[in-house]
Image (cartoon, rainbow, N blue to C red; front, side, top):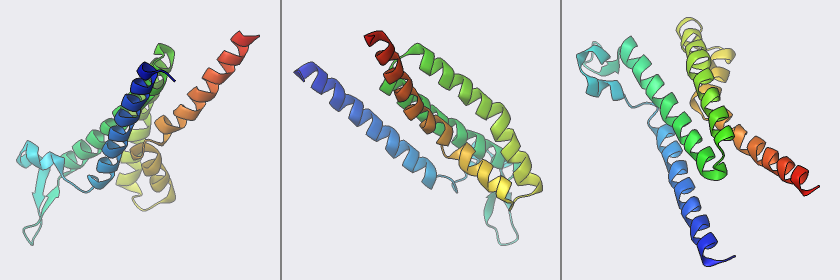
Length: 151
């Protein structure tokens, strides 16, 4: 491996490690009320004076966390593969999650908050499971394409 490839590999590793730290931070931010920085519309006080997210604040926090996790997944895919078709497909998956999975989770959480379905949707939606499953799929696809061109 020459020096340029080594430098690129090290840079890629460092960026991916930083993205991993971003995902780790996102997990620990799950209980933080980011909406409280947006004003009184996002905060409710209970009878003990404790601050909690209002319904709008809760939605804001969930959408923000979803977008953060998915953008990290998109960046990881872009860094690992650098192919427009994989990035475009990942963006489509992101929007499917944003417009279908996230609303489904929010509705289930509103009406059946402690169900197995809600838990499954939560894990699928807020942990970047789908984006991270795309990485081995894209890796496999690149190997299949490389094998086809070798023939």
